[in-house]
Length: 364
Ligand SMILES: *Cc1c(COP(=O)(O)O)cnc(C)c1O
Image (cartoon, rainbow, N blue to C red; front, top):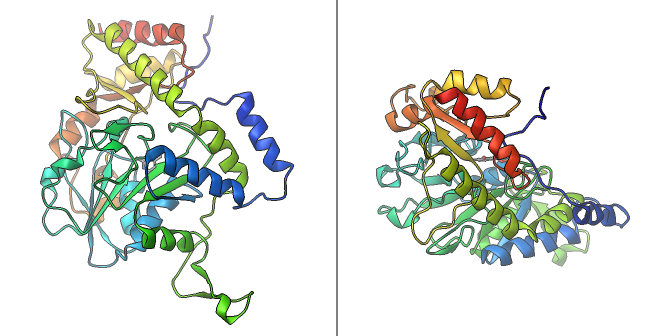
């Protein structure tokens, strides 16, 4: 008997989410309108930031971050090699150079102690939902951006990720596998009034209203984009946000259960959240020897494992960075062994048991 496919990540949508989207579809606004504003307010309140500016994707939101602080040619933007390419591309979009520093094996987050003094900006990625400890940033670059695509609902001793206690801006993604979803979508939180205003203009063609010249009048001074979120998406996001705490609690329960069940196996467990931190557990990425065989075995058994990530410096586009594959040893060694096991709020205990039993049969 073939068993049902278990993905590595999946959205949790309920009837309340569907009704919230339906209500917008029956109303007057489809594109960015009052529901986007309500969603922004709700996210800002949830993460204790002054402002939240919604975007059409997390990638667009990251582009907004690098653009509004004026990063460009000649500037160095340092990020983690163990991330999705968008964390690096947000530098390339504005003509800045990408720099990489290796990860710390004990967290798999970039080693912010290694950021060179000449860096103009850092994009700190909270890998798997475990927040980077920004208190370790001894030389602060001009711009600190958090790529918190994995980490809505996570926290540090400074408070919720997104409160920008030690950063200028923090980006969240609402892709379906992320902590909450809007289908596609992203948001930037900040405590800086001027950055918030610039982000709002950047996402909508840099349109600035000039009512002193007439009720119709506006001006455009900088290059802008159409990176707006729709009210349809924001309605889903607002409804999803009410379940964030439940989702993160469930992810942590599943992580504890994986840890207990996998403890006897020759499998290296993911880094745990230090005292005072809450892990978001977007991913549960274990390390195994002979990864290719184990990966293929799990996939053949209908278990949708994934590898996060093919490192930034392994891709042909990254020839501009000048760091070869193998030259960031902690990242390169982790990459050889990482496998993301299924982790999402609706994963059942019996599905999890099936993942563990299949993994056990492959590693022993
Ligand atoms: C998902 C993700 C992004 C991009 O978000 P999208 O909403 O898919 O554009 C950026 N960085 C990281 C680390 C991600 O996982």
